[in-house]
Image 1: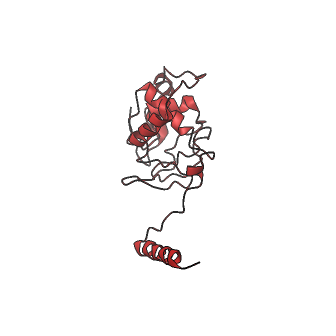
Image 2: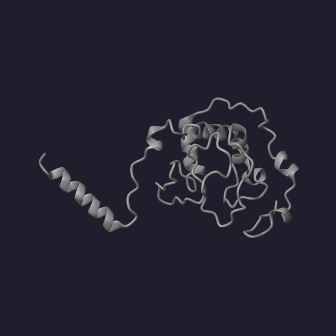
Image 3: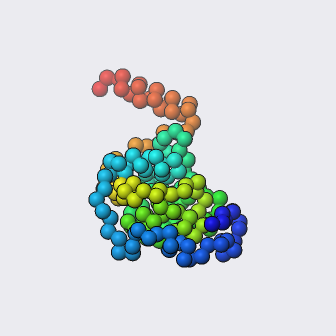
Length: 179
């Protein structure tokens, strides 16, 4: 497959629709998600996805080495593609016309470029192992508004260190005041 560079016309790249469909022989259209482990899915998510994708509604970065290049995967299950903001250099490098349910998520994680017909700028080859993808989908299904820890995270600390120090000093002073 050819790589589509920023600014290059996607139509001129050599991606035939049949290439996209032939890449997915194990996930039929009427796919039902088999049993999986949310705990393992969280571990695999951290390994494969969390470098570029956040799990919070505001797309916050919470780990060292993490970037917010991709959209947040909070509330991804059942969302239409292209709905969240993305820190991307080219606006046309998005997956279009996909409803993120179990089948499309499984297919995308197996081969993102095939599903997107080359229109993604990710350094991610895909996850060939079926059960690993099943576990990740089970984890992604927990990233929604019913997950109180993720839906209402604490306020983001300031990125400016002196502001954080001042806020901490104020909190300490308030704790020391007698009631």
